[in-house]
Amino acid sequence: PLGVLLALGRRSALPAVRMSCIVFIETVRGLPLLSILFVASIMLPLFLPESLLPDKFTRALVALTLFAAAYFAEVVRGGLQAIPKGQFEAADSLGMPFWKTQRLVILPQAIRIVIPALANTVIVMIKNTSLVLVVGLFDIISSGKAALADPAWPSPSTETFLFIGAVFFVISFGFARFADFLERRGNTGH
Image (cartoon, rainbow, N blue to C red; front, side, top):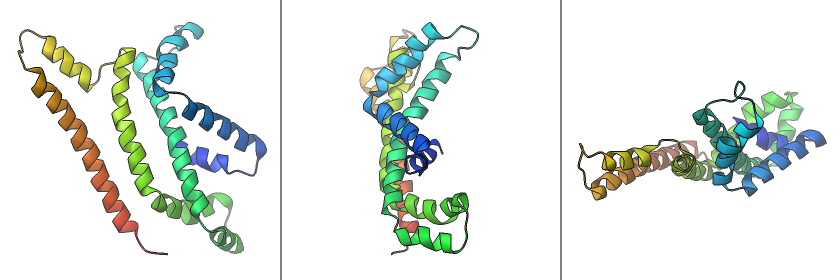
């Protein structure tokens, strides 16, 4: 939802809204995810008092969400630009207000067009979640390393990392198949 709002804001006729969305999107997309995670985990505690500071997991979650929203906004913006101007004019001629036009006419078509790009972005974001281990959060790779370090559970590292890879594969492949299903279902032609 935040990515859709940013995409709509980037195409807004209001200069302040458009510029603030452009600055946010281009700034976040221009920074590596790892640096955003470091700012959220290490720099933010230096600037906020302890009483206002959310826990490390929440900070990482917000950082990942903002990073993903910037990328989603660009994908959705591409879909919005692909919609013919006649669709906007038709909704205007029916007297539909802006938000109703977006919700019922424009966004369904735009999202249908960008399903492959959205699926690709989601899969990349799923894989990017493993970067949280760099800032000290536990993820599936950290769990595998902890299991290997436990002397009570002697397990070969090959099987552990193959299992972790299989988990990522199942999630990513499953989402790719779901995106293919959505694409076939929404393929109504032009």
